[in-house]
Amino acid sequence: MLIAPIPLHPKRLRERGFNQSLCLAEEIASRLETDYTEVLTRRKETKQQAKMSRDQAILGKSILLVDDVITTGATIREAAQTLRREGAKEIWASAAAQG
Image 1 (cartoon, rainbow, N blue to C red):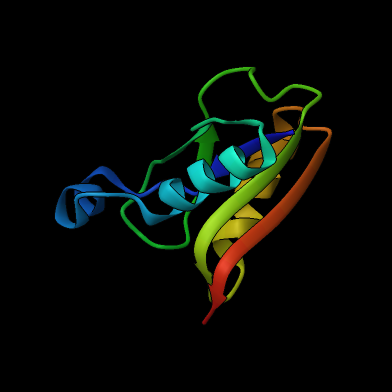
Image 2 (image 1 turned 120 degrees about the horizontal axis):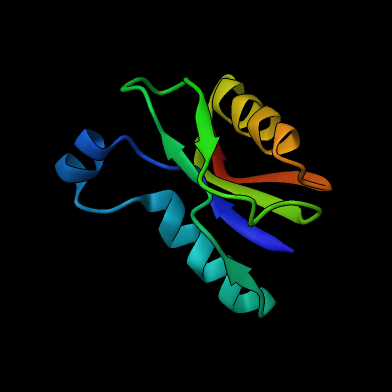
């Protein structure tokens, strides 16, 4: 299983200085003794827009999406749809909080 954090837009990342979803994904991957990968990128500067896979690293894989907060679920849904289109076998989602 791969662990995949929900990405931040580069502008938001510069403002915050870190991606909290990436921090969570790293910790989860460490505890599960598995890999994490940043296969998604944020293409639009909004909270709930499409992400695109970077490469074919997810083909046939089970993926755990990690986000800090799930509010409406739109971001997770969009990321899952993108990963499904790119050939992910299974997609799971996890968040630290629900807004």
